[in-house]
Image 1 (cartoon, rainbow, N blue to C red):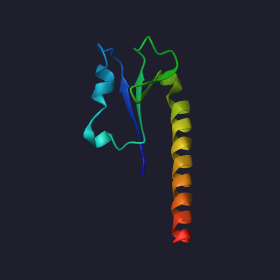
Image 2 (cartoon, rainbow, N blue to C red; image 1 turned 180 degrees about the vertical axis):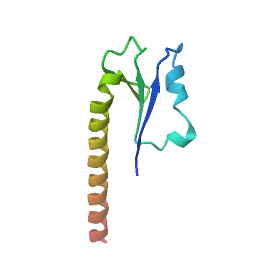
Image 3 (cartoon, rainbow, N blue to C red; image 1 turned 135 degrees about the vertical axis):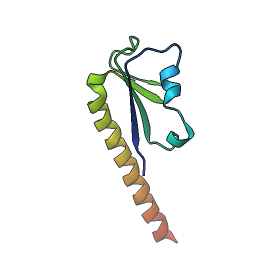
Image 4 (cartoon, one colour; image 1 turned 30 degrees about the vertical axis):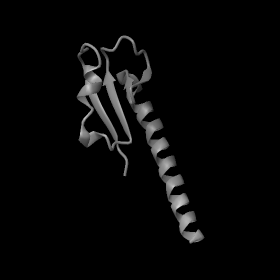
Length: 89
């Protein structure tokens, strides 16, 4: 099962400090990593930065809905493909 991992940050760290904070071996299996930050001036709505979604708080819920639907669609295709492969054997 894939998950969407959210982290909220109110501070602006230098470089990619916020992104590095949510990267860990435990989280690499997540379906999507999202950093919600109201201090990121270079991101007005949302942006994909080094594989991590960065968004303003007001866009967190719509982004979550879109990412969840994407994960559901991928899971559906994988399940259908697995069923198709078993029928061929």
